[in-house]
Image (cartoon, rainbow, N blue to C red; front, side, top):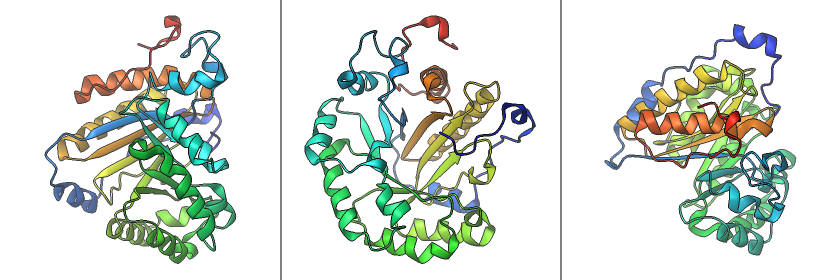
Length: 301
């Protein structure tokens, strides 16, 4: 993942602290009626990583078996594959059968919708996308609407109209990247609209774009995309800060948290994932599957 990449020499000078949650977020959580402890879902962006063979997947694992092996270590995935291709429903159904009953796929909206059509005149493509991901059935988690960097606040009406056009039972989290969305005026407008339409707001924590790091929850659910710097020493306190925040949200009654682990070099993502999940379980009283590395010398625990 390239978004927010900076030179390693800059990392120690960056303020990686998390912002405090707003009054609006606190009000959203206070109004949550559920007394059941929220669920935490942890995953990566892809399962088809050949470099994970011998690290996470057994030696000589074939590509067709990557997903089944991935699902032994994680309970969800941020599914980038659907961004690049709209798959036949039969293919989606086959993926759903390849994982356990508690596993969730979080499909990204197809790029034809978000990046090429920019949410306009895309009714047919949207219908095809929704038909495709219906194959996940009960294993479909929230969908992830990622807008390009140059999709600014002048497109607010297009964003609102598109989200309003989607089925009400479709859970959608939105990621915006243009800097104008994070000014006070539009930050509040976006929060209020998402809250009124029952949409979530993705938090992307990456070193080079600290404006995108927020703790705004327009609904009592969080979708965090953590982008580490290839197991740099600064990764650990950043992860620890998120675990502290997640624990506070769980105590406040949040319903669901989706934590997606990224690295600029995804070859070592399982290593930092093992560290993260073990700490989550210890500090938050959870029982998320811990990625089990085959070569224990690479473990950070």
